[in-house]
Image (cartoon, rainbow, N blue to C red; front, side, top):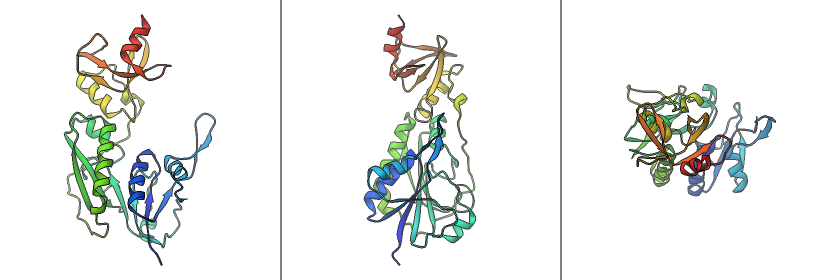
Length: 270
């Protein structure tokens, strides 16, 4: 029987890895999740992986928890919104997850955002063999990048580019090595976490950089909510007062408006 490399993914972060793998592997089987009801109208909506496959004529299948994928050589998992059961892992070929931190640091759902929020100077990604716990399996590959001063969106792009360079060097037949005992975890962030209205400057700047994809960060200004996508360290009259100084926003989305420069927004208030 011919064996295939499988890819499991379901969100926008999955798509970049799928694109890289699809270019490197001549035969790749894509597994994703079925459409879900979203929005006020509860309309069935396909996920970004299915959308990408449709646009690029890539065959895909919906995940079946009880299925035995007998033609799978190994599976590569990236941002797949499903936890594999012990029975699934025992039944199928090895699965390897791409985790966007240097494990065991920052296990969990938000490693990139947490690294930026904590002012880390470096992070990277880890490929590990999925076992029955969360982000704990044997490491088969790691690589590191410098992220000092970077926005989360830039960190993601750097990791994608690094993975593209590394993919042919990753040995998916390697037994890997056990993760060190020291560890740290991340958690989900919610809307209140994006609020910088009562923040000190350092915290506000880190939130703007960390949440520019997930959020963005926002501030209450003149009784309106202003989403801040980026800021400048250069002083100007286009500024917002925080607890210990001023933040100088660049690109913003004012309440009820489109993305614009903060200067243009202030000009429209006059």
